[in-house]
Image (cartoon, rainbow, N blue to C red; front, top):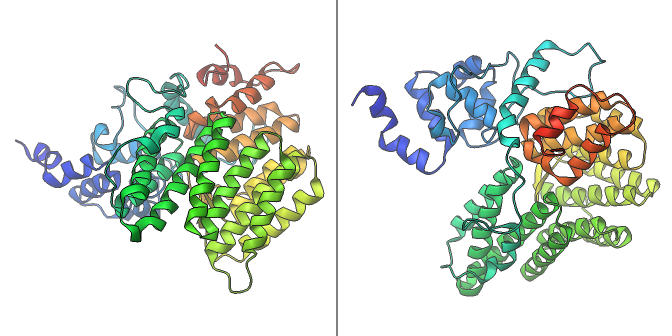
Amino acid sequence: MGTDEAFWASARMRAAVAADDVGAVIRLARLRAQLNQTQLGQQCGYSTSTISRIERGQPPSQDVHVRRRIGEALGIPMEFLGLAPLAEGRSVQPSSVDSTPIGHPGVRVVATEPGRGDPMRRRDLLSGVAASAAATALPWPEHQSAAGRPGLADLLQAETTVVAPPKLSVLARQLREARQAFGASRYDELTRLLFALIAGAAAGRRDGRAEDRESVMVVLAAGYRLASELSVKRNDDALAWVLADRALSAAQATGRNAPVAHASRSVAIAMRRAGHHTDAITLLSNNAEKLHPGTDATDADLATYGALLCTAAYASAQSGARRNAETFLSEAVDAAGRLSAPVNAGEITFSATNVAGYQISVFTSLGDSAAALDHAARVDVRQLGTSERYARYCIDTARAWELHGRPDRATQALAAAEAVAPEELRRPSSHELITRMLYSPTITPSGLRSLAARVGAIS
């Protein structure tokens, strides 16, 4: 066996691949190439800190384009990175600018006038769209199980699955992997991960150690919250409400305020989507009042409080209550300003950037596209954190541009979203936006029809 073959077949490399530890695979390959993190970053167009995050398994390690770019630089077989091999003759061109935390140059979809786009930004965007075309050709996954894989509706039955109670460390890892899949918009994988997570946590609640019961219930509540979020992505609002209610029941059993607040937020989202805006706002306000963080509040308290306020602001905007929406947003901005750093608040990372993203949605819902676009221009895309958050930013900005009478800019924003998280454009709500633009009595923007076909909005 040659030196090269021996390296890829080594015990450490096999263990890293078997554990799907892409960061470890990259680190081993970098050390073999006798490169430090700065040198590898220079080859790929990333900063030293970005390479460090990737090797620790943090964003943007889940981004397909990032994996391919680094894989090519280090000669890593693509299957070792969980990817299909590149087509012959195709390569990933490194960017000359630093990457954002989601693994691609920060495409500012609000920054240029028609005909004045930056060539580097255009090149990277188009290469990203081409890379995602194969993925978007797949059909939208079914809610029911197929070929032995759990489907979305099967999550309701996960609790009854007979499994041995896993260790808390295993449940923590499963929850972390599920959140990473959500952040990367890998929703087929997420369904499978959630089924195992909920089944294991339920087993721990029934048969696990008494001293672990409270922690297990926290994990179970988090699993059901993620399942509810996934159902929203799949446009199954009824299922989202049922799963959110289960999350709330599990959270209430913990006796902790934070899990109850996070689960209440999921219930409120389901309420709002069903048209019960007033009830949703009341639920969110009551939970925010219970948490109301004083001068000695922890960052976690502030983040949970702010997340509730942002959701209340959006529900208010959808009901046409602008003054209430602006009041909630103002309090959320204040909470974010008191944070020392972005903080995980359930299924979102709360920060000033997160609030700015909500401001886009709120003012678009209120019909004020100018205010929405002003907030969009202020978002630092490098702080969005995940592919899912960046894609949502792009889609929300596209809605604002459409409302503003600029379908060309909306199309540009949608293409940026497709480049990093194509599944976000396969959602019914995204299809509605795309088809509305496609069949509006205006000139069809270049690229919109082909994008619509790729994401299944038209046949």
